[in-house]
Amino acid sequence: MKNYFFLAFNNLKRRKLRSWLTMIGIFIGIAAVVALISLGQGLQDYITGEFEKLGSDKIIIQPKLMGPPGSTTSKSLILTSSDMKVVEGIRGVKWVVGMVMKTGQVTFKDESSVGFIIGINPDDFKLLSEVQSIELLEGRQLKSGDKSKAVIGYNHAYGDIWKRDIEIGDTIQIEGIDFKIIGIYKKVGNPYDDTAVYISKDTLKELLNVGDEESQMLVKTAEGFAPEDVADNIKRKLRQNRNEKEDQETFNVQTSDQLLATFSSIFAVVQAVFVGIAGISLVVGGIGIMNTMYTAVIERTKEIGTMKAIGAKNSDIMTLFLIESGLLGMVGGIIGVIIGIAIGKGVEYGASIALGSPLIQASFRWYLIVGALAFSFIIGSLSGLLPAMQASKLKPADALRYE
Image (tube, rainbow, N blue to C red; front, side, top):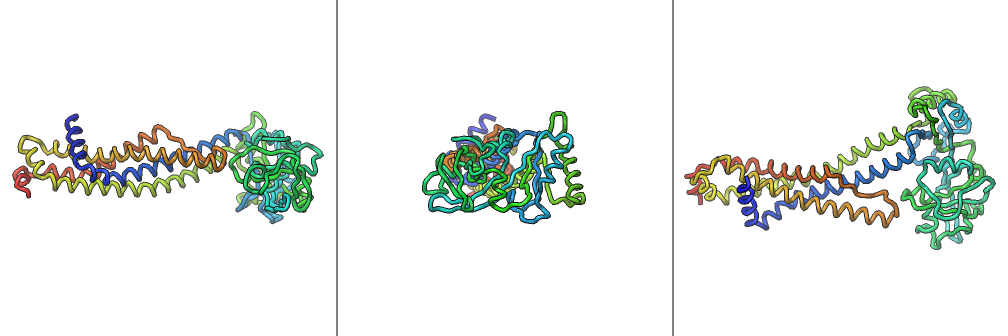
């Protein structure tokens, strides 16, 4: 077998330019597959990590929306304080935090922008900090009595929203009302969090003329209770309170595990589409290898005749050509993996600078690398199968007379 590889390698070495051109389709396809899957896996790892921080004992309740939380305006869809009281009274619920999320005009100096305003009771920040990934960079959190104070996301202080960065002690206007900045959050990488302005929930409702509404409720289940069972009880009680029929609810109740499962299933489909697109390059590369091997059979007809005349069997000729085509695929795969890793790391580095967070990162699992190399070798070998069969069937006398 060692001699087969030696002969195959020398044969490919003699046709350097053609070999490199043949491998282009393979390494482009493998590079695309490795880069896309690694970035997708990195994103999935990050999201999974965030859900793990959230904890499996959390339940999220919100209206059925087509947009972000707080975007609904229909009175029949909004959640209310009445709904929140129902949830608080359900067995297995340890605590509930309600938030109001709206958009409003934010002004700083002589500039104006549309901002994402989040209203929450100051006393609930301690509970919310158990599950949220945002942390204070400067200043302090809201406290009871902070009616005209605000905490801002990172982009307000150090992003490109304003010509001059906002600092602790500065004043902004929300819908024309002054708010003093008392805190700045660290960069998260999520545009909603990084551009949000946090104020007291009661102040937000008064400021934006919001009625009895809760844009989103976050529930923590008590120890000893299964979150899925508690979520089912919440659905049943809310249906009763809102006079809605089963499967016709105007709200969603999901555990963190259910949200993660939904994300994973959607993301798997997206990844499959990307890999399918990249796979087209592999098919093209396989066709290129087949074409090269057919050409090699024609060019080396006399050589094949000589090998058979001195005792080479059909299986020897076939094995030699299969190894040659497999090597083309393997080398193309190695180059593709290297390029894919470089692309993945390049995107990760660029995203970390642009976003300032690990939201986009490349994750190179061993089975991804091994699978990519094995797949490229198999593609190469299969592409060379028909030319190898043709070469092995040549009769020595005909091959030697071939011009």
